Amino acid sequence: MKLNTKGLLVVISGPSGVGKGTVRKALFNRTGHNLDYSVSMTTRAPRDGEVNGVDYYFVSKKEFLSQIDKGNLLEYAEFVGNLYGTPKDKVEEKLALGHEVVLEIEVNGAMQVREKMKDAVFIFIAPPSYDALEKRLVRRGTERGEVIKERLDKAHREINLANNYDYIVINDEVDNAADRIMAIIRAEHAKCSRTLDEYLKLMEETNND
Amino acid sequence: MKLNTKGLLVVISGPSGVGKGTVRKALFNRTGHNLDYSVSMTTRAPRDGEVNGVDYYFVSKKEFLSQIDKGNLLEYAEFVGNLYGTPKDKVEEKLALGHEVVLEIEVNGAMQVREKMKDAVFIFIAPPSYDALEKRLVRRGTERGEVIKERLDKAHREINLANNYDYIVINDEVDNAADRIMAIIRAEHAKCSRTLDEYLKLMEETNND
Image 1 (cartoon, rainbow over the protein chains, first blue to last red):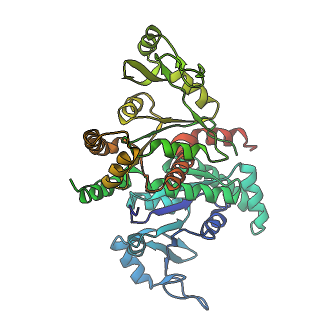
Image 2: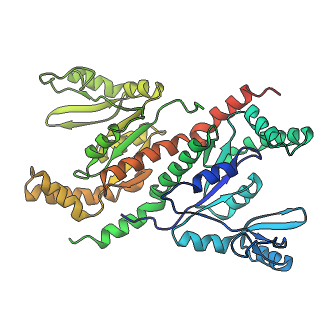
Image 3: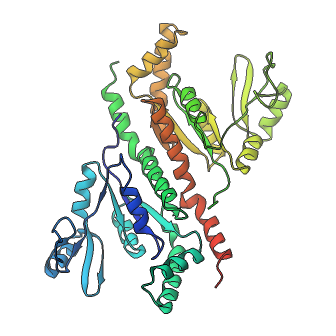
């Protein structure tokens, strides 16, 4: 029975090094889902082979600022002189098609989305321990000791903000974490607050009495 | 990673004829769960082969009334002159062992539990249509037309009370319904409101800084 046909906006966030990207990939590798990506908007120039509307929406700085003014960015941030953000209208289009739109973003961005999308589901991906997080950051090999110390301090602060999220999923094992996220999406669709009005309407329409 | 070690009280309810019992059986037939039954207390005499503490807790009417006075019944009702109820202390014992305790009860009983167990999860099993519900009631073959009409009217009233539940699971197909309930249990364990305090405590304990 097809109910609750609108998709969910699923925000996956968590500290740097926790494995958000790996968990997201494991999610999308599953079959039988209707998960979709959100395509970001950026002022950075396209690189070779990058396609507008697929990799990013490439826009001028003027256009980006005008989108901010219009309130069309769910979140945005500057990174090495370029602006990156999530266009609300594009997300809404996909939700209306019944796709679950997965946003994998930093903790700061997630808090911006929280203000603007009351119906979104916020999932905090958490490390099983600080040791495990440190090992992941060291294994990446791209950061020096000082940077790793900074990231761990930041992670500590971010983990203590997890009460702003709906769910906490501990990334002890990638497939477990992805399973839990799929269960969360399924359960959210069954929530009375999302589904009941539509169900009651349908029941009245099909009542032959 | 073992967190949120306490079990959930999962209340499964819905109108007569919706298939609550069939869905519950499908749930318990799955492997790899730690679902447990709640054993009811009753003033009815044991039948041949019924074991105290397994089929029911068999008690005198005086003892039952004293349990009501002590506030130890999550819900109770009279049925053909006998009292039946759910003893809170026995449920709490199982929850403390980490079992998910499944209570399959009538809508009226579920509303009584709601008052007493704030942490419980309430799932309304709903029919895909009034036609489907009527067909099920007729198929049972045990009721006359008048009784069926009464049950349908009652179902109509109960369905309009579904907003008192957390989730609505439409029993279009038994295995689908059971899958959704398993997803709900899994998601509920990942809720920040249930799990975050325990997680933060553990993180502080294992922080070597």
